[in-house]
Length: 432
Image (cartoon, rainbow, N blue to C red; front, side, top):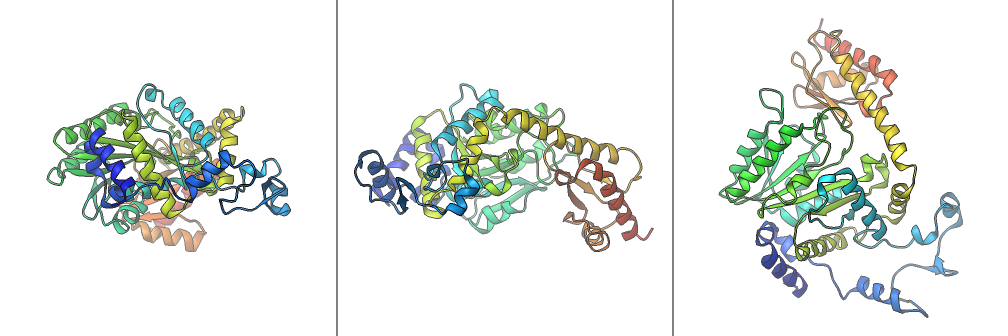
């Protein structure tokens, strides 16, 4: 094993032995090279005041070489903020700005130990880093039965982990914390579990309320006290889009200092929060009261980034930083929030109006981009195909009964026509 990896492992064994035990074989072996091209280039950047011939970019006139036709479209920005490589951990100013935003959005984080967010190539990349660092073949990854299908690829196919599902809703159609607890305690013999908490949930648009949040935290604490080391991942892709009386903060705040056997990891980003899907700017943040633990986890994360994508795109990091620093940021986000809330409320009012009889039952939703219909009399896939082929309307069928509708991408004035047509398709597929 490389001495740098060994040193990081020794730090974790000393500072946070349970976190060390959570690492995958790759997680134990990975490190960030301190004497390679990047470190030597960084040293040269501060000391080479005559010529710096270290890193593979081209300079012209004292700034990064670029094509005028590209720069003309980006003239609001300096070439140094666009064309140079961003550091593997991301633009330092962006990391600091996002950390400040996290505390502002999650006041409960004040005074809690957590690291500086590390920039990822959006949220999928952040989740894949979690998988690489912590998931080995046979490890349990616990998710609800209504989930984003990419978890299977990221943790199951890529890393060989076992996906363990529990029903998202209980018999009262609320979050099934008892199911989560049962799935966690079932891993007692293994002594390890990875839990992914995705709120607002994709595909249902559901976020627990404060009481349900307490139940989730209690379930994780109970499993930790029973001897299970838990990597608790909050997939906060749709964070902030809370339209009703649900949790308003990420559960990361509650999990950050919950128990020595719990490592809280927050995966979030500008992708959906700031409506910049194509920018691919996300973040991964670890919680610990030990600065040495945070530093070791950061170095291992940088090793994963260096060995896969090397670093994220610089221009989009600059654009997001510019937005976060703008005095107009909060007002513009609030404006978009009201539009999204209006769409969600319109969907709920249509479905609750009685105009569709019992044909369009739905799972509770109160947040995010999506809602999910529960079709009890016809196949969701048959309805999806009928909508697409007969009416040119796209939806997502999930299993036999569930039809996901992304109200986020439908103007509010068009929602009535959309759901009227979905209802029409259901009746036609049913032969009525």
